[in-house]
Image (cartoon, rainbow, N blue to C red):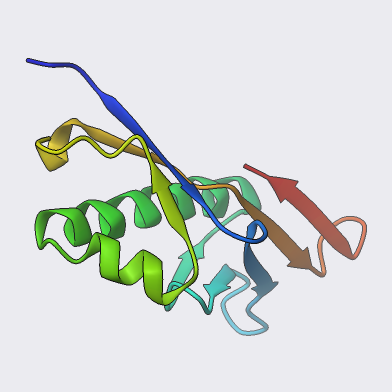
Length: 113
């Protein structure tokens, strides 16, 4: 096994996730328009964790399908440290992002990854 390869994704700014509490279920809903992802969790801490997992799975799928480069280019992003031959299961993506939670403790809580 060659070991884990970390691929850093860079863009013009940090990727933003907006989170709000559902008025009916009280769950936290996180939305990332650039990645076209929506996640739900019972707490902000859990949402933070599932966002990381979802982005990792999506980027690994894009890598596996040879669509990563086109996806990144379409969004104005770049990847660093992409080896020519790597197994998708040996890749960890490092994506700078922040969660902006409206209606949290301080009305607008920001957490950066």
